[in-house]
Image (tube, rainbow, N blue to C red; front, side, top):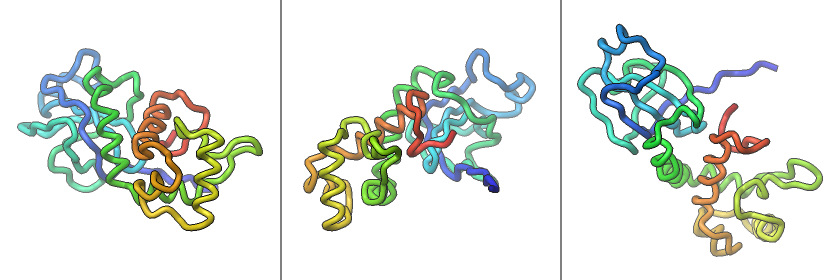
Length: 189
């Protein structure tokens, strides 16, 4: 089976370090030609990235920047993927709100997850991997979606009493990024 590479097109700034950080992976020679170090999270696969900003560019947390293959305005060079543990303290603090923002912006995609998710094992449903959703909520979701597909987070919340589905999904994404879960629902390995 051919495995295709998944790349982010856009990402959100988690932290902007105008003078880089101690132990950064790029050389001093390269850093003199570029601007600041940026830590980002991708909007499609929640990939954690580190990049160099173009000289003179200043970014703030929550800024959306193009990181795709074509010419980039703010980002000079993608240094590569990083792990959750490589994020700065500021980046970790911003991650929750940025992931929630991405989830809300991609509401249709995540509502579709609630409408189409299936059992993972004979004893566990994918819905149960979402923090706060146990057997009771899982059955309410499954029964309600059989009557009519959910149209949005608000509809899901009204019909099943699941508290703030966007926040629960964001919490799951953070767990996956931290490496705390066996199964990946929303992030890539």
